[in-house]
Amino acid sequence: MKNLAQTNYRSALQTVRDLKEKYGQTWDAINPESAARMVAQNQFRTGLDIAKYTAAIMRKDMAEYDADTSKYTQSLGCWHGFVAQQKMIAVKKHHKTTQKRYLYLSGWMVAALRSEFGPLPDQSMHEKTAVSGLIEEIYDFLRQADAIELNDLFRRKESGEDVQDQIDNFETHIVPIIADIDAGFGNEEATYLLAKKMIQAGACAIQIENQVSDAKQCGHQDGKVTVPHEDFIAKLNAVRYAFLELGVEDGIIVARTDSEGAGLTQKLPVSQEPGDLASQYLAFVDAEEVEIVNAKEDDVLLKRDGKLVRPIRLANGLYKFKEGSNIDRVVLDCVTSLQNGADLLWIETPTPNVKQIAHMVNRIREVVPNAKLVYNNSPSFNWTLNFRNQVFDEMLAEGENMTAYDRNNLMDAEYDHSELCHRADEKIKTFQIDGAREAGIFHHLITLPTYHTTALHMNDLTEGYFGEEGMLAYVKGVQRQEIRKSVSCVKHQRMAGSDLGDDHKTFFAGEKALKASGVNNTSNQFEVKSKNDKTNQKLSEVA
Image (cartoon, rainbow, N blue to C red; front, side, top):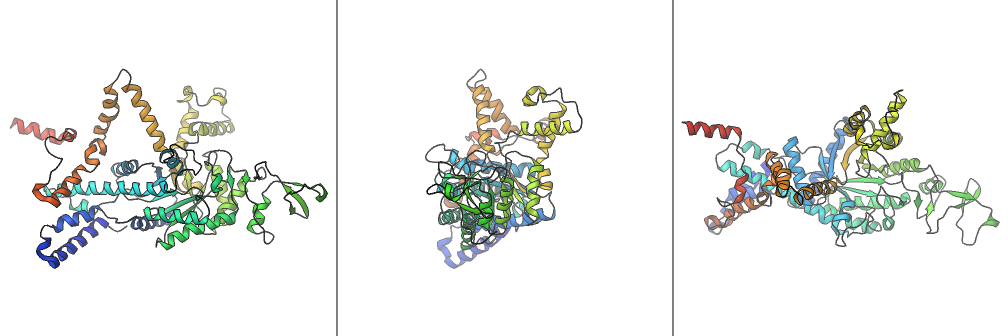
């Protein structure tokens, strides 16, 4: 992508110089370098700018994956702007680039953590605006990460350091968000309206699922009810129209199917001719043959292969699908979605099994050769147990003596250093590489990682802090680790924008600015000298 920092700075510098000349003495207090610096520190003026920029990134990444499956992409789900910000700062620090790293916005986490109703289950009961609000919040925090890092570089430049190359080649923290719109929060007009809000906030990729909107369930729970293809296609169209209306021509639609684990439908579509989509959907509905004389009053009947059949209907009015039809329904869902405007697929599965995923994707690719997945590396899976079971079956098939293992207790810690568990952990380690290569997985994400890490870290801290360790639990387990690992928010005042604000106040008020930095700022305690600094200090003391 083009170098926005360099382009914006030079363009803004000339613009402000021209404006100063135009408006004369009334603009004397405006410094072109300071104004250009502020422009460079805020490279994206609107959410639509972000959506267009990140959509182009995703399209480029999708094409690269089609040419080379090792070039898959990844993301972690974030439920707050600060969490997303710290994730991307860490990505840049550890991996030197944000390329192929995205963000995921989980509807589950919005429901559980962002609703004004309080914690809710993943059933589309939270406010629609909470979704677009979180997208906007995330990008506000990522913009701030840009501003803080660039501000530090400009400060270093002013103090005489040669950092111009780092400024000119600055890589933004702004990356694509794949954002969950659940089942669309209502009819197709409701889907369109919310999609617009999400795109305006910055979303370049919207993920929508084929469940009934008012009966939506978490993909890893029971009771899922899917809609006929015509209904889902209408919502795919609604999202595409939203992208087009807002000028995001490269916008990405991720079509999710929950049919693998869904056994119910709310609606029987109307077939216009044999073999059409409605007819194919109806063929999956479980039914029993019935003679017309035995039909009850108000029964719903279908003609199937020249015979009358009664669809199996539950007391709540929902219809059952045939047992064992789930994989066929998944394949038809995916092919239909790709043929009607979707760009990527999401297949919700019961376990993380590369062979099972590949089986479905290969069937889809018989019709759409470049079909590819966004895949949920879900915390709802017991990864340890799933892969230990997979390896147990493999070792058994290889003729290994498995009597040392209790198949019903493979989670036991006593097996942690066994051959079975080493092999299982290796399969977990390579799951994303294997899935990208063998099962068409373009994007790997974990939906709820920061939900679980927050709970785990709070568990560990409270155990020690309210116990015998007291303050040492925080110092040893948190602050000392932040210092030694150079975690950016160890200087939480700086991370909240204190230094950035000081510089802005100086731009605005000059020497009269009241600044937070100075000798009495306790953040100075976190300045860690390098070994070279200490060596130079000792040499100067000897001299």
